[in-house]
Length: 121
Image 1: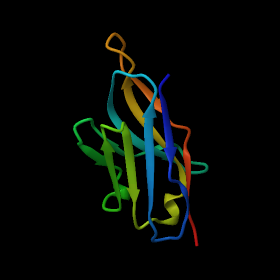
Image 2 (image 1 turned 90 degrees about the vertical axis):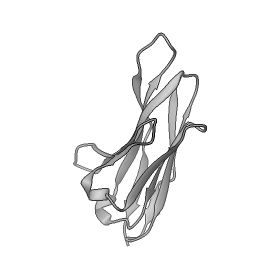
Image 3 (image 1 turned 60 degrees about the vertical axis):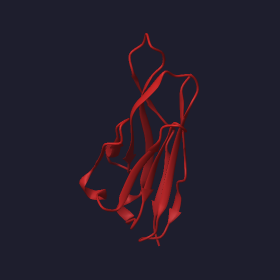
Image 4 (image 1 turned 180 degrees about the vertical axis):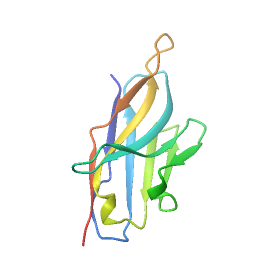
């Protein structure tokens, strides 16, 4: 059973920083792309950042220059460093990973349980 477990959320003042982590655990063959989505109250879930297995990254426009996604393939972990946080960054942040369970199965999109990020003075 594959699990993605997030950590690092919390309350921070505007202009502050937080670092989210998401570790994949369980038995699996390989991990492909990993990423972070967020969902604010009353809004649709949106893609924040994504990183390929080779390290290619993409960001939504509103976080470019402020957020950095990275991964440690040896630790099966993806990170989201968030700097210069704004109140509009407040949301539940979800980790996602495209993971192949074994060599005979197709990759499947797994999700973490979400971690709350609140930016407020």
